[in-house]
Length: 155
Picture 1 (tube, helix red, strand yellow):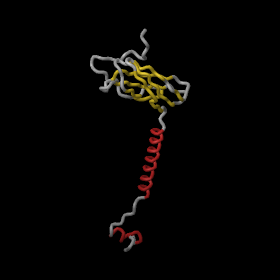
Picture 2 (tube, rainbow, N blue to C red):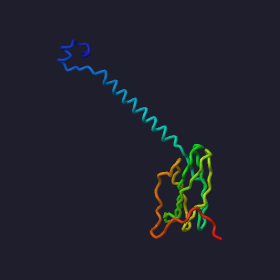
Picture 3 (cartoon, helix red, strand yellow):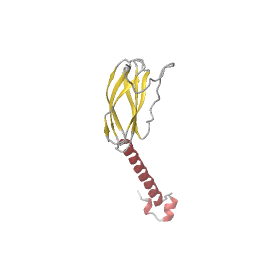
Picture 4 (spheres, rainbow, N blue to C red):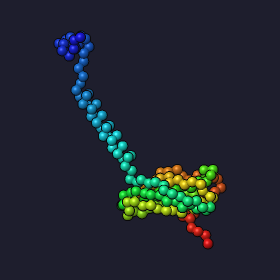
């Protein structure tokens, strides 16, 4: 088989050979490089969030829950974390936004989350640096509301 590039120009035209434009190859490679850099940057940002958090433990009582979690953040940032307690029917019984001050890169706060009924589970919905995280809003059954936070013992 004959390589069409080696034929004279009149035969190349006769048999429909059209050389590829070099600028097109350069443009495609440039777009691919920009996409690769953008995807790499996005992966880096998603893999290294400014705040990481983990629920450690919780204890339930009739009118409150003691919740302990850990937060890793930059020392100059404040953090806001959202806690939610639910009952056996998965209805919200307590909801709180807890603010953590700047100054430490690791904190292990304990919060007394007031509940309107005995809770069976606690969720740490999220934490964010210098703002309240975008998490689901409280979903209390009709006719009920969030108790005053934080819980304080009644005398």
